Image: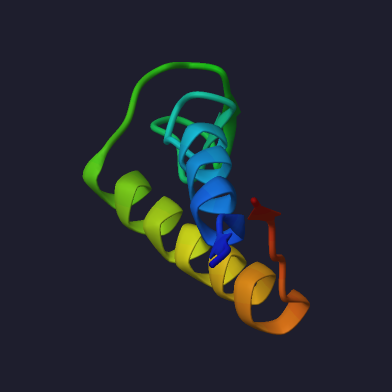
Length: 70
């Protein structure tokens, strides 16, 4: 029996990359977007969560990423 690790791997990578303030923050405190500021706000967390959900859904459902290990 094989397990599909695609959704787990995609979720882990996206969680690291889409953490608010790590690579970018949208919306930022003083500008629309800032890069690598390591700060966050409530609205930024909400925007990044919506982006995370949309991109994850597209990659898993529409593209169909599957990784199988034996």
